[in-house]
Length: 181
Image (cartoon, rainbow, N blue to C red; front, side):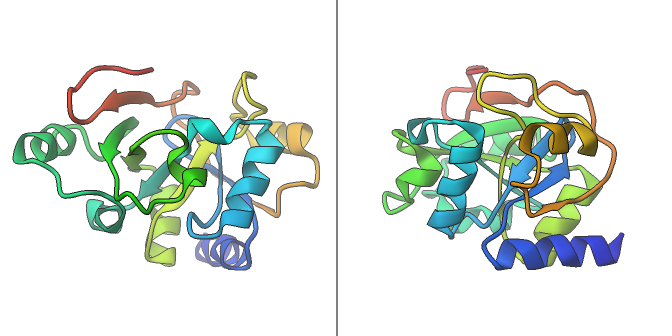
């Protein structure tokens, strides 16, 4: 698997889009600092830039440079449910690009506990864009074959591995704790 993680990371570093397993469904990912890659990903999904995307990481320190300092109560709330399939919207730095945060002043983030996705973030040394592998509004892919059937050759690399529940992650507001999805 190590070779496959390195190869996926190579594609990401080159501006590519990959598909990879997560704790819920197959995800599409790219370098969050590469605006062209993120916009290409949004175009493939037919997703409006206003919605924003999720960043996953192997640990919270990979996300801190993107976020405003968190109040102790918010940090405790988020830490209690991480790692795992819960995505949090947290106040982000004002300079975070619109292609990541959409029309929001927050950024959706998750500490992944999926071994393949976490290994990929560790290999990269930072977070990865993570959005379900589907066209906007359609069912997410749960297998590499389903990814290929939807996106054909538009994905640069598919990292194989098992997925979890098959249901996209819950999204919670980190400040209020409310479930958003």
